[in-house]
Amino acid sequence: MHITLRQLRIFDRVAHFRSVSRAAEALHLTQPAVSMQVKQLESQVGMVLIEQIGKRLELTEAGEELWMHARRVAAEVDDLCAAMRARAGMQRGRVRLAVVATANYFVPQAIAAFRRRHPALTVELSVGNRQSVFAQLNDRAVDLAVAGQPPADADVHAEPFLDNPLVIVAAPEHPLGGRKRVSVAELALEPFVLREPGSGTREAFIRHLAKESIEPRIAAELPTVEAVKQAVQAGLGLGVVSAQSVELELSAARLVTVPVVGFPLMRQWYVIERQGHNLSRAAQAFRDALIETFRAPQHGVQT
Image (cartoon, rainbow, N blue to C red; front, side, top):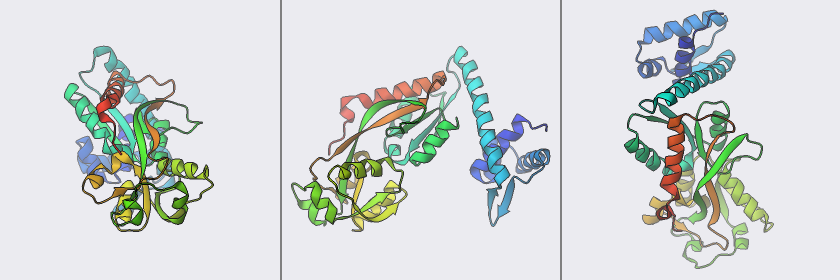
């Protein structure tokens, strides 16, 4: 096979966007040029990599496997380029960052501060669930991640930089919302709207209740924080969320916190990198800026 780096980069963008036109736009190429490179790559490997299903492109099994390797090759090349740029300073460069959805409520603040200090550097932000964020980090698709505490078996270095208080929220008319004190035992009687299994917030909440021999009544499992907040506002049940994610709803009285004994449940946000990985100077600078931005006392969240 004579697969070129150009073909892999083009295929990576097509696979990422599931669109030839969007890939062409991102790469500053014509659509025919992108299509031709993908066809040549398919000819090299002797298999179909992309199929048209309705109006959307989908990867075949071979395409999925090739995309995994293409991302790793691209990451290696990016590391090489970053190492060379590091010797010449930070006149150019990018930081690839993945964050869990809840962290996206505050990370853009750090990105804006970083860009004011380093306008020549670019931050590429990917937002996903906990599983996808750690998968991207493990696959070397990103330089840094922001999430809750990593799994015990993760080969990463994680540094805490910001408190992550978990609060229980309710619709304003909920009976527990007007109370001054609610016992943990009373939670056993209430339906809850929680994130999907694997969510760090959900796991921390369930572990906390288990200490009191309480198993929550789950009315719904939803994939995003926004969906949880909407469901709680609609009266579907109580919710457990990061305090940073409900500041707007609390100030607008669309949600209220429930004063449960032992809450807020305090966790930490971590900036995470692969163990033993040499970060580019740009990624190092962003990590340091993130920590500097949020370790200041004025960023504490009132609950």
